[in-house]
Image 1 (cartoon, rainbow, N blue to C red):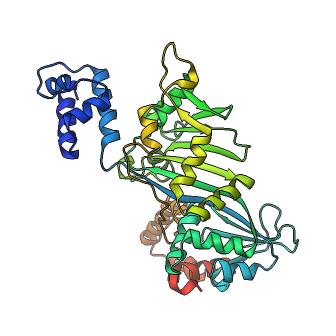
Image 2: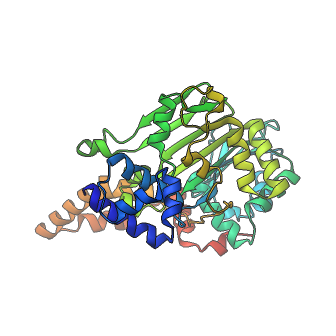
Image 3: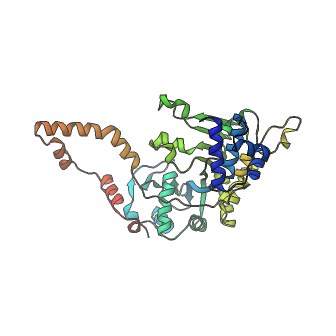
Length: 393
């Protein structure tokens, strides 16, 4: 699309969003007269001007918003009674959980319900450990919703029980894609990132997965050491879902994600903050603003006085709606196993079924008929067949 047609598209968006020419011109750093001439086709649009207008419209988009979710939880409870934690704190029926006689992080055994993992040990110093990764958080939110509880309720009950928060991830979702990860990476390269952190790393993902689409793969930016108790991870969520699950980029509702990853004391402080103010935005941006800001370079001005970039100002609260801690409950689905079966098992199965058809045999149907499910698979059938209400207390 040439720049003249692009200007007509931007004019249409401006009018659809209900943004005045004056407001857009101010945000883009051009005069209103210049914008009028460009929209009327009486002036030739320069590529850099079009880019400024695109970014300004993205920031002023009334549909541009942020949401925040809990995306990782690891809590150690000061008890060896794993049944008590499952029944009284998670409020789940233990009989639906799969038991394994091995654990992680040095624990002796664990119980699992989909992506919810509870580690157990008779060592009082280890206690009971709950771990919820991203999908585990979404699944647990479904149980919380059915129990008419919130994350705040659950965290408060955990604190009252006696626990140590080992890790909490707060994930901020950028719905409209205003937070440009590639531009922020460039700002790190050009020393336009002012931070308490001493290190940052940038990665491109998917290059070896789809060589013919190498140029279009996503960016991930880590700010801070991955070994520290606090660091940030910024990445293009739509590309991540495309690479992991082959979901079309345009179908992913969240374009970018900013994750605050907190361990040990940092996680404890974040939970105390959430429980004291019940305001996810305040807690999240208190942490972010303490460690980081992105600026625009100004010649002749000392670096600490450079002003924030417009994109960063929008992200930290200017010209956007308030952000709330939300939940995105999803039932447990063995999608990873099903994807593996679809790629690795189903084609061979289909081939041998055709052999059965051609030869008039019944090898595949007899194989299924004679298959024996072990205890784990029987429990998995029970989990996937039960309604959420059946599994909660």
